[in-house]
Image 1: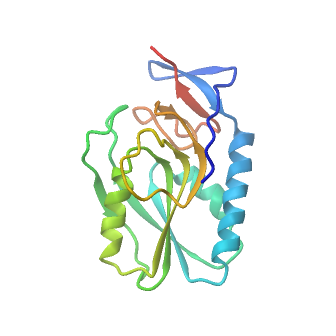
Image 2 (image 1 turned 90 degrees about the horizontal axis):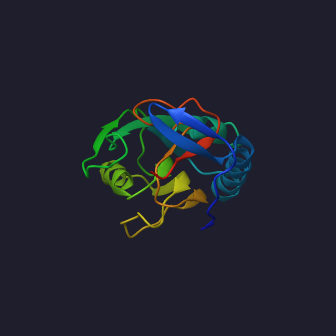
Amino acid sequence: MRMKFSKPRVGSIIIENKKFLRYLTSKQIEVEVKRIAGKINKDMDGMQVVFLVVLTGAFMFAADLLRRINFQAQVSLVRASSYKGMVTPGKVQIMMCTEEKLENKVVVVIEDIIDTGLTLKSILGKLEALNPGMVKTVALLFKPDSYKMDVEPDYVGFSIPGRFVGGYGLDYKGYGRNLAEIYLLEDA
C-alpha cells in the first residue's frame, strides 16, 4: 500500500462557515486515479468484474477511475450514509442498488474515503450474502490513523491524516462535492 501524506497547498475556500485549505490539486488526483486504474487493469483483465460505487461521495472518483478501465465490466451502486456534519456517529445505513448478479464475480467496491472502516465493513457484510467470488476495495483517500478494521483496502490513492476533508465528491453539510480539488479543514 502506498503511504503518503500531503501538505496543504496555498489557497483556501469557505464551505458553509468553515475555512478549508487546498490539500490535493486536480493534477495530483488525476495522477493517482491513472495509477490506480493501471493497477486494476493489470490485476483484473479477463475477469468478470462488477464495480460497486459507494454513493454519494465516490461519484467523481468513480467516474474518473471507470473511464480509465480498459476491460469489459459492469457498474452498480450502493448508498451508504455514516457522517453527520464532520463526525461518524458509529451507525451506517446501507442501501444496495445493484441489479447485477454478484455470485462468483469479482466485486470492486469504490470508496471516496476510508476513515474508521465502519462503512466498508457494513458494505462487505451485505456483499457476503450475495456470494461474490472475490471482493476488492479501492479508495482515493485512506486515514490509517483512524482506521479500526483488520483488513486494509486493496488499492489506495492517498493516505491522509485524520482530519476532515471536502471537495471532489466529499462534502461538508452537503456542499463542496463539485470542487475539482480536495481541501483540508483548517485547524480551529
